[in-house]
Length: 520
Ligand code: RAM
Image (tube, rainbow, N blue to C red):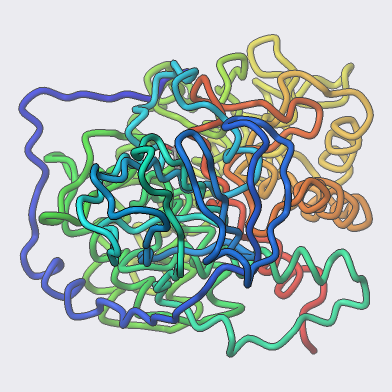
């Protein structure tokens, strides 16, 4: 499923007051210098076999035409790279022509980007061709990269000299201060590691906004943002960054007031012409959760109407019969994958968001709105139960399809009574394979639905199994997409553009801290 929305003559709103407030809340970025912890050569340019190099010998290892050296920075980095290059042999009589490839994990390092032909731009692949005219040289690359490995391939030199990589460093950049966070102590080694890696994932995505991924798309998406904000509350507690993002989304919207699914901040703040109904509803949820944490009256006053616009728009999509219409379903993301029938999910997200919208209305003492939202919530919940609950099958069925995603959103929306919710969720454990859940985004909501249905042990097991599965195959930050049964899976037609440090996978720390093992 390609998600490409192009609206001709799209002119998003620009609320200068909200955007000015967002600007004031811009975070300080912290920088650290990191050097490689190891190095190796790949046997062939795209091979998975490697020969290790003793690091202190690196400045003496020469590179001739076609040879490569891979620097291993030990863990995922986000930042700017500087290389000190020199030569051995005669004076260089031709430029050094290098290819630099940055990779978030080892798998990506040995992929040949020329084989990629997916629907997402190949320009996301982090590779550069560089000519160095004069050696020795200090080369500082202008782009910010997200990587653990840097492969330097000597595309061409001349027979008269060889290249030496004397030194390399990365100036990392993040709005988070990971070193100030205490080590987790869950009593379970795997959970501890999952906790730490989830915070490392979040830290690397915390830049001038909560980015979805520092490799790609490097921008604010509402669905990712809500999960980042939650995890931030149990860790870095950067409330201003959350507020900034709420104001950015509020400050540039669709002309009819809808919150865009994502937005650009450079060169100026501009909403993308992509609307996802579930994402715009997550704006409402994120605002209410932010207020739970901070009680920030200014934000409530400034953003309340915008939040209400989102639910009101979504509610207009289900005027006939209290079930979302086809357009709403088309506008709903939930997860990647074409096979998923999303009617129940779309309805579920709306009911879920109404719970938060009602809380907002109560905070604002807007009682008539709160009352109206309650009535709509009840009507939608009743309609959902009638339309989707299948007594014989003992679970929710969405237009003939039984999926885990439908159970998740019906359960999170409290559509069925607790016993039936538990029955439906148990069925997901036993017999619902297809359509498979594809991303940690949906897996997060899966864990939350298991917990809501009272299946705590199953939720913990899933957390360990799914996020732990990424650790088992070498993750040091959590990924955008992971399916242990299909490790090559990519929503984009090629895993070389997948992001391996992705915001929506950062929630295990939140789940452990707030839900599984809350501090007394
Ligand atoms: C992708 C991004 C982002 C997600 C959207 C729907 O492009 O990875 O994280 O929110 O899809």
